[in-house]
Image (cartoon, rainbow, N blue to C red):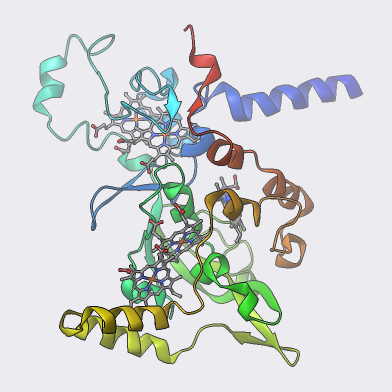
Length: 306
Ligand code: HEC
Ligand code: HEC
Ligand code: HEC
Ligand code: HEC
Ligand code: HEC
């Protein structure tokens, strides 16, 4: 009986993670909030919902029936899709006439961050998806802004005595579609998945045994004023003001940035935050960080020779 259970578990595990995602693409593309920046104002969601994809007309054949050129990360040739090589030879003209068919193929399978409603000064000047430089990790970092306040990663921590990480009271991230994150305002209605807004982890400093915000609320107004007069400022004035807004802001090397939370030495106390033991262990040992820190280029091993 025990053996039966073990075998069953083994196959269950495989059918959940591998059988449907036989090309391995959903290891990364299953995360709502994963996006790519197209231009300064436009972004392209990269999330694909496995269940919805499976139910779509193209769900049975896997990703590579269309995305044949994707064999490594970062990808090259990812936008090369040929609908007619092996399929659709008979209705080729109908499909070509439907100019938007290609553009909207994954539309109903994608979720992404639509809005962040907080009093954060960072959002006054920075875009909803602020990370664009490093194409290996930018999509992953942007995804984290849905469940972490900017300062959780960017605070110059040595400037503060004692920091603690806790949920913000409000659900202030609004997703289009399904949100990504474990908690939906745990303080008031834990686990309410009916809403598409979630709360985020924030950082506080402990002063005399009390939680204090690390943000200066007056900065919000100052930042709005800065934007309205920015064009008239001299170069050095502008720089001085920007330095002031960033006086507690630091920037990390990628290799360190992921380990700060996804390792045994995590700055976050997952247990105290309410993550169960399995999830905490998973987050500490998550191997996705290997993909972005260990390899400059990661080839999909099982794609060679087939
Ligand atoms: C290790 C993580 C990872 C895996 C595995 C992965 N991707 Fe991606 N993919 C990304 C990231 C990150 C981006 C966005 C890169 C950027 O920001 O420029 C991306 C972007 C894309 C894009 C949009 C790119 C464009 O230029 O339009 C497509 C299409 C895509 N992936 C398809 C796939 C397919 C198909 C597979 C499986 C064969 C796959 N990906 C596997 C991480 C991954
Ligand atoms: C029936 C063909 C087909 C299948 C199957 C397919 N895709 Fe796509 N995919 C497309 C087309 C067409 C585009 C749009 C390309 C363009 O805009 O030029 C696209 C675009 C994308 C993009 C870029 C974002 C977007 O919405 O344009 C990602 C990421 C992506 N696909 C991932 C996947 C993953 C992961 C799978 C498997 C779970 C998959 N695709 C299966 C045809 C397909
Ligand atoms: C008043 C507008 C403004 C505010 C407020 C602001 N930023 Fe910035 N930030 C900028 C601009 C503009 C740049 C580009 C720097 C330049 O032009 O020299 C920048 C650059 C950055 C950089 C990149 C630094 C580097 O080394 O390349 C980071 C990280 C950053 N900001 C994070 C933040 C965070 C986190 C907050 C909130 C605590 C914040 N910013 C608040 C305008 C702002
Ligand atoms: C999960 C941690 C994390 C969170 C949360 C986060 N950042 Fe970052 N951010 C980084 C890392 C790591 C880099 C450095 C990327 C690199 O070196 O390529 C970075 C770089 C930046 C940059 C430099 C530009 C760029 O494209 O790399 C800006 C601006 C920035 N962050 C702003 C923000 C703002 C605004 C927020 C909140 C909305 C935020 N970040 C939230 C980790 C984070
Ligand atoms: C400040 C802490 C922090 C940093 C830094 C950080 N993460 Fe995370 N990450 C989290 C938390 C917390 C979650 C879980 C969110 C949830 O489920 O509510 C998470 C979730 C993830 C997930 C999804 C896990 C799942 O549930 O399947 C991936 C993938 C991930 N992180 C990758 C990265 C990468 C890559 C980096 C470095 C660029 C990084 N993280 C940096 C805190 C962090």
